[in-house]
Length: 221
Image (cartoon, rainbow, N blue to C red; front, side):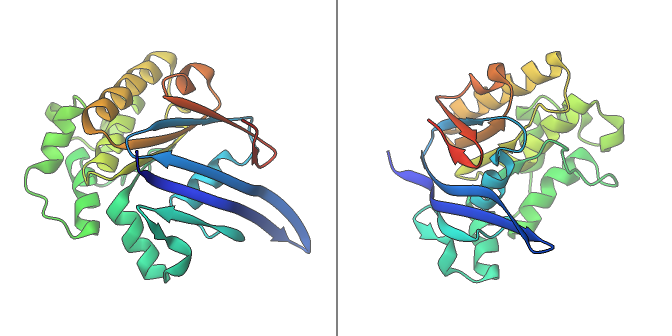
C-alpha cells in the first residue's frame, strides 16, 4: 500500500537556559494508507512529541515529515497549515472542545476551518459515534466519554487520510476507554483511514495492526 505519512530522521531538541534536551533522536516511521499503528512507551519517551511533529503542529530541529507525498519541510507556515487541514485529523487526551459551543457546532467548526460546506455532515458524524440525540448539548453537559466521542467526530468529519490520537483514553475510566476504542476500531474499519495512536496502555495499543515501541526518543522495534 502507499505510504500516507512518513517521518525521516525526525529530531527535536528543546533548549532552555543554554541546556539542550533531546526529545526525538532520528525517528524514521512510515505509515501505510489505511494502517492502524500504535506507538507505546513510558512517559517522557517522546511519543507525544512525535505525534505533534508528524501532525505538523510543531517544527522539527532536523529531519522532515512527508504527508500524502508532500514534504512539509519545503512549505511555508501557511502551506503546512493547509496540508494539515487537508489530510490530518486529531484526537487529544483533553478533548479540546470549545465550551461555549454545542457538540454539533464543535464538529462543524472543523469543516468551517477547512472551508468545507457544513450541511448535515456534523449531525451525520455524531450519529456515527452514537450522539445524535445529544448534538445540542455543550461539553459540560456530556460525560467525559461522550466528550471524547465528540472529539473523534470532529476529527473525522473532514474525512482526513490520517487520524492522530494522543492518549485518547488517558482521561477515561475503563468502561469509557473500552467504548472509545471500540468506536475508533469500528470507524477505522469502515473508513479505511490510517490511524496513529499514542498510548502507554498495552490493552489500548493491542487494538492496532502494528505496535511500535519508543524509549528515550527513539523507536526500539
